[in-house]
Image (cartoon, rainbow, N blue to C red):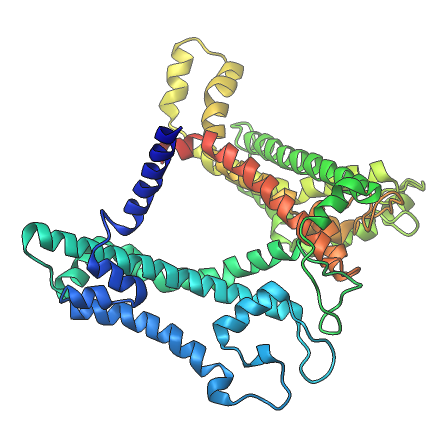
Length: 456
């Protein structure tokens, strides 16, 4: 047992060694408390100034934004006098304490400020570890060799070996604040009671842990809606992807056939649906399929509920999406087919293969390997194809068994309704997380199986 504990301690110690260096030197200990102090002990003034200036900027921001400098306002809450970083952390963990009056707290704003602070502190921790590691390694190398690099040599070495990271550093910081922070906000909203009954800034919101996830699992209405909408979303994404793919492939093969004349004219006609803005086409189709006033029913002399019957509305939705999406795949297949090496076909014919065998054993496998990444992206796009559903059916017809969703709603339109129409931000965030996990998992798994990924 003691042996196991020693072995575990040794492993933990090894992990710390990988982070901070082979062992903790006096220079490393100095940098542990004051960034750049270890480098100053190692007589590297340039590096010392660099690391110390980073810590100084953070300290100055904290001091200059606190009531120590501004003095604060009369009767303001204590937290309003905190500095930028302290107030950000306080706001993130409490989501505010005061409602109404002059000094009311706004919970979503506090959460956003808190996330920004956490990300900025993460950057500080990165440089803090880098500073300790550098001080340690420099001190150890000096003990072994008696030589030490100047700060100028160090920065030159970093610039030459890590040029890509140096120039992309500011972009990465912007990426954290512009892209990662909104994702984190949506993620953490799923763990709050941010809904129509808690509407900031009139009300504060609170952390509820996994309570919202329990609702989705335990409450029959939410569970039924989620399962039903998720299944239809998956079915929709698969059918929409494969119908447009094989439809485009079929049209490309037909147009490229040597018997077809005026190929350019045919391609121009077939690409027109893609050239027209999708929203315009969908609104035209919505009127075209109207049960009462639609031209289609009038021409047929019938009263077919194209968009009002649950099953028929789904079929109509898939058909319209096929009309909109097939030109893209047709042009894509045309481009790939015309780039094939003709000697492959000649070799297959010499081996005795007929046209059917050449297509299924030569053309199709090569074609599939080249378009597989695009096919996966198309699946992900159809999974979140908001426009097609919203502008054609708006999720209708209504499903009385569902919570805030209709028969043709997919997850993304359900989320839109929950946020815009019913202010159920917390439940919408849960669905966003589930979509992210589902799409991310499926896409990653498929990408890793493609030839394009393996050859990279």
